[in-house]
Amino acid sequence: MIVPRTRLYIMFWTFGGLILALLCLGVSGSQSLYDVQWLPCPFVDEKVHVNEEGHTETKYINREAVLQFGNVGDKPLHPTITFLVTASKVDMRRYLEGSEDTLHCEIRRYSTGGIVMRWPTAGAQDHDVWFTCTIRHTQGLFVITTFLRHTTATPAQGQVDFLQWKIVNDRDLLSTSAAMVVLTRTPSVEVGFLKEPNLHCQFAVDHKLPNATVEWRLQRHGERSKLFSYSSRTGKIDGSGVAVKAIAAGNASFKLPPTRKHSEGTYICSVMVPPLYGSHDIPLTLSEQPRVSINVGSTLSMTLGKDQKLICDAEGYYPLDVNIEWYREVSGGSPTPSFLKNVLYSSHRLHQDGTYSLSAFFYLQPGLEDSGYKYTCRVSHKSLLTPIRKSFYLIVTEPDSTMWYITVIGFIIAMLVIICYMLPQYLAGRKAAKKRF
Image (tube, rainbow, N blue to C red; front, side, top):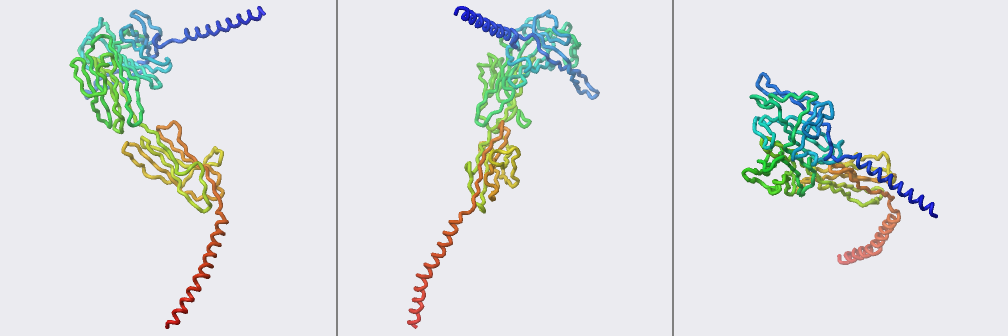
């Protein structure tokens, strides 16, 4: 008894050790995004010149590049353009989620628009060069833009920055520092009517008490309207929807009032800390699923020779486009259902809440061969992952001959009653009239 039990213990601990080793390998083999050392990040370079008419023309050039995280003096990990992001109070990695293969990174040059000023951190210079690094989650979880500051060896002279961009060669290593991030975790929003969505907007700066201005604007039909603005320098507040106290902690999220049709549009969150201006566009669309019904139950019994109007209603949907189809198939389903061609449609009905309704109907006068068929109304709409279906089974019967016989016999009896009782009275009346005359 001792040997089998000992073997059992050995097998148990061996198996447990293997499981633990696999778990350890899995943990050590995985890497959190906060610890990631580099990301592939194409660099969209610019070649700017002034044409003969005095207009500025820009040619964009896509170049291979890498975003590398480390310290000043680190060597590049790859033989390509390397943007080395050194340690600062702002680390874009702490805002990232998901895995590396779900991230889309892009670096661009950033122009201060002629504003020349020293960024208020140690080591900054008046002639610093700026880049933006934008990372998007491929499944729409977030978009984050980081402003990277690079100090050049020699300052540019005279012209606006974009007319004399710093030349970046194919294997250059540019040491940068993250100065500000602006991100949203709601890159696009789709909600129903009378909802109060929260549009996320967050920012962080690498120094205390920045001179920040936060704004929210709505762009709709080519026009922009200001919804909210706040300046930390003046303390002036215009509009509502943002918790001002939260702005000091970097939270500039905007809460919408109950959504209506005019709530659709592109909401723009912008944060300005001179000379930097970061913003994110958040498109908001409204969507309501249709309520679908038909005017009969799950089974429809009809008598041969009769007809009936069959109606399929789709109600309360938004936006306008909806597709309603009637088709029939043999009981038990058919790989090739037959779509009805005699279907008529009502006009779209607009309700006070901004939603729409539509009806699709046809007149059914079945034969005995139609009995047993399954009729289905299928409604497709943008708000639906799969179409909504409402069905009924048709049963067709011949007219009841017993009722016909009863009707005929009843008619004959009624006529006999009239003849037997009404005719003698009529004849008696005529005789009485003759005696008077």
